[in-house]
Structures are given as structure tokens and as C-alpha cells.
Image (cartoon, rainbow, N blue to C red; front, side, top):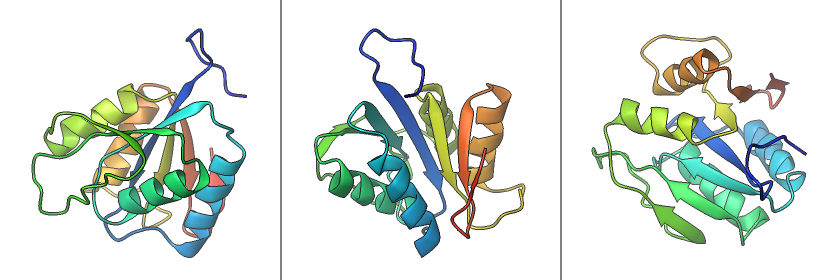
Length: 149
């Protein structure tokens, strides 16, 4: 069990990934993480097409009673509009601001980038860098499904 600072032992997963979606191996690893997490977590994501939407659907399928907190972007161009399950939708914000909110709300950041090497000009990698700066625990799921901590 992950250590938390709250009296209910509920912990928060933040999720970040690419609009191109996850590889099948990344999806399989995320599913395993959620299967072993029990029902003591809340999932936070940014509600974009691709990986966010896939993570939402995997979460709802694996743990239908889990609360999902959506941090939507102001720019709706790539928004997925996830609504299934037990959902709380927060106010829309600019991409970087909402990504920081996801990290700030999380005990652990689950990240599924589209490549194994860090790149600049990537929202996913910017979110990972911010989580590192705050010394958050990060589960980096690489494209082959392996986890780099």
C-alpha cells in the first residue's frame, strides 16, 4: 500500500500521456497497476483524446466504483469529453496549468510517453519534469510496457 497523508488512506494517481494513445503494452501495464491498487485511489487525468481517454476507460472497466477527477483543457480541439463512471469535472484551464494541477493533486504520477527518451516541447514530458521537481513518485510506463521508477 502506498503511504498517504490523509486519514482515509485514499491515494491519488495522476495520469499523463500522449494524444497518440498508449501502446498495447503500456495499456497492459496500466491495467496491472490498477488491478493491484484495490479500491483505495482516485484517478486524475486531463481529458484529452488518446492516452487520457484510454486510461479513463481502463480505470472505469477495472474499477467501476473509482472516482475519476477530470482536469479539462480550455482548448477543446483534442478533448475527449470522458463522462462514464463516477466522474468529477473541474474547471477548464490552459494545458500547462491543468497539467500542474494534475501533478499537485497526485501522490503518484503514471506517465505513458510515446517514446522512451525525454524530449522538450512535449506536454507529457513537461508534466513528468514538473513531478520530478516536486519529488513526486513517478511510474513511467515505457513503450515496451516496462516501468521505470
